[in-house]
Length: 324
Ligand SMILES: Cc1ncc(C[n+]2csc(CCOP(=O)(O)OP(=O)(O)O)c2C)c(N)n1
Ligand SMILES: [Mg+2]
Image 1 (cartoon, helix red, strand yellow):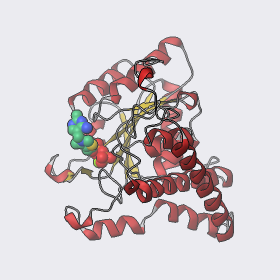
Image 2 (cartoon, protein in one colour):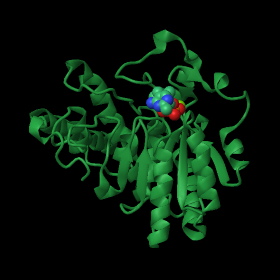
Image 3 (cartoon, protein in one colour):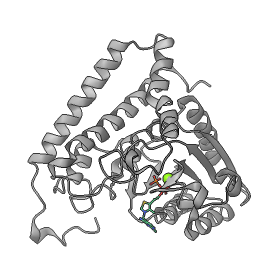
Image 4 (cartoon, helix red, strand yellow):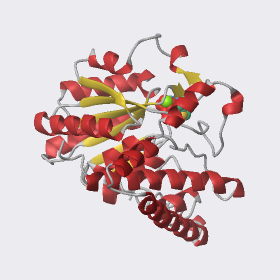
């Protein structure tokens, strides 16, 4: 596939490292008690948003849910505005009023993320319907988790998108858990998400969400199909979060996950898989990766400094520009 080339793969590696290092810094600095919003880290799940961000244009739209750091950064959302938002500062992407679960950067098509599981799904379908009515050449990406498909609104939105032929790509990141509940206590054992969705009469595929090549080829096929046929596609990507559901720590001591499972997914670290491939191809070497990492950590450090020294929103501005 011609899109799987050195330049694109390096861009994807850069995005993955940016997401990983940003979330690691959030985890490290969270105990300083200056970030006062809950955070849902994406460490371990960097591949899908990096590929999606690399192969969508700014004009393509995107909505997401509570675990949205990677989706926002992958799409090219401003790092400074993101970190400022976590600090509740007026320079934040939601002017310091939203926190980690309410990210937005319209300048790159990241319309928004919201905290209520599944509630951005109908919003995404509606955005895409409006693109269709206005004849705009853009697709909409709707990120959702494996628990999202357990909400009624998912089926209503999916059905509407199918019947009305709406150009939307549902990107489901199946990390097998909803907080501490595994799929086995929430859905019939052995029922496959992508197969259940396929039964609703939509193209639906399942891929390894930690393997860059698999994600690229599935995503590009889906995007081409959606653009050409103006019909939706559903993609299930299996992946795994390494940290606790919500917060900056690990939660292995709670024992709700089999340690072997975590170990398996850590061995399948999406960053290592891509890095090793690029090194084997001689398209990068360990020095160039280190340089990339250094420039990313400098950028992150500057964003934290900017956020810390930015002012809090003024009380008298509380109701100003709310709907801008
Ligand atoms: C309607 C609704 N129900 C419950 C919650 C509490 N809640 C927040 S995140 C979450 C788990 C969602 O799991 P999933 O969609 O698989 O995403 P993941 O956290 O695994 O990325 C739950 C139940 C919520 N925010 N909204
Ligand atoms: Mg999940």
